[in-house]
Image 1 (cartoon, rainbow, N blue to C red):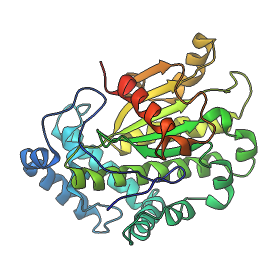
Image 2: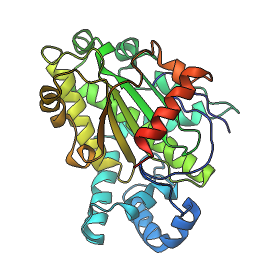
Image 3: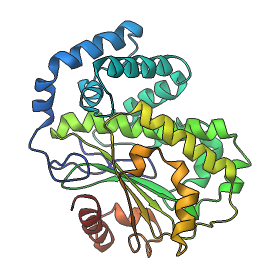
Length: 305
């Protein structure tokens, strides 16, 4: 099935394989599933003993493979406890988020083409948030060679004060976690389809971001949702790019570093140029010179040493 990229949650075409943000891995997903089948089966049994709801305890083995591959866990006991804690969140505080995402994805993929509208409409507080987050501000596309998802956000083009006047910090966090849940589920689904362990590369375009001012509540929602997502989605994040930062880089780092967990900060790269002259992010999704240039830039920043 070919998925069309739309707005901030859509997905583009499918191709071959690269894992993480470095050199291509020699292992296919099927090989990884086979090598870790006992651990995956154990983790899956634990999850489904907590809840048999497929939205809460996913049936896709790649979901559990990511736990098996996560290197931040010191041992299998810590790995198991992390899974239990995350499934418990999915069953309680995150139940509405994961259920909405699960149902929306089923509706979006019911036809031969991806229909992004159900995914957008099902987002928490979409009636208040969606008008502030269009394809001008954020979009998800995919890399044609690695298959990784590339999630682009342009903070300088978000009217964060107006946005946060309509929602609370908790509501904004729910929205961000829904976006991450959809991207994670799509990455797991397409990992099986492409036999590639798909990651999510994040591009934060900081052109126009003000170092002073803006909404503290919006920054808080970004920070808290990022930290929670790192816990909820092991072995999912690829490289994080901070693009077109203001010249006062030292001040920028002080402002933005707290927004990301340490494991994310270890993957961050700063670069000027990419997306600088892009008006609408659809330009990097649709075919043409804009997309070709963007993909070439991603090759250099994400997949080269």
